[in-house]
Image (tube, rainbow, N blue to C red; front, side, top):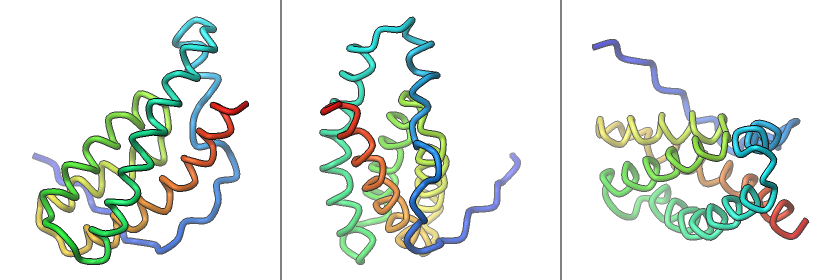
Length: 129
């Protein structure tokens, strides 16, 4: 088994220069069904609002690593479906660190919560659009 190096927690990520979601890729995947893509964004938005609150608490030291892994794994799946590559990558790293009981998983959870907040703003713009 090849082990990947876990990213080092970076603190608050800079706002993305580009959208976090590959909207064109999603539109293409779903054959131009704009309302369907907006519905996906709306469902993810509802879940991410809850996840970001819990990640904030976990990053501050509450809860177990297994809960960080569970939430990060869930975010990884939805971010992959949304074609949100940066979020997917960070969620995967957070999930892996938590599963390996690496103390840095809490800092990664903080970074993930921060990036999720940026994604929430982007999703809200799409849904309200």
